[in-house]
Image 1 (cartoon, rainbow, N blue to C red):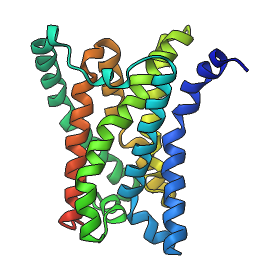
Image 2: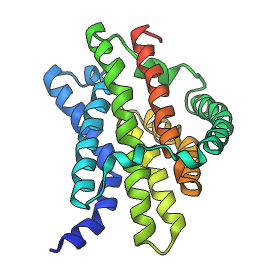
Image 3: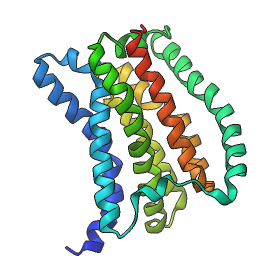
Image 4: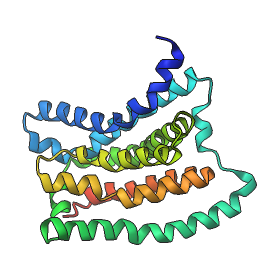
Length: 238
């Protein structure tokens, strides 16, 4: 099989890569702990390990294609003021979208907004939390959106006649990947995790589709948000 044919299939193959890797690393942790329920609480570790694999894959792919992976994370200096202004406006929309999605889904599925938090957050070793406080948000900046919107979406735009599908597929997989982060065998939780970030994923996907220079801003925002997630473990928020 030619390199070109292999390359053309990479975007589709990568769509589900993070979802699978999340589950793979949780299984590894479960085997180590000998208890599945313990592995559910270590989802930040599963995510960080997945991020590292995603970054390595992207580095290798970009190098094979003769491109610079780190060029994804450059600011467009020509339009930086306009980009910041637009991004700030989008961020104002982002906050209520993120919180409203979780709030109403929790009420719909459990009639209690605290259930998903209780299921996801538990007591972890403080030493591990301090390590993840740095590595989780930093690796997420370079892994997640880079996979879906830095590599997959532009490639699908080149390959598919239906440009809307090139945007929709990364949006869908960015959202549903969370059903294995962590994987808890509870149907309501799986539905919740699959859908809770869907509105946010649409906002990110459309924003980057129409203005690619916003990519770096969303990547940084993602890291800041996930820094806050680690803090919830640090302060044992339940």
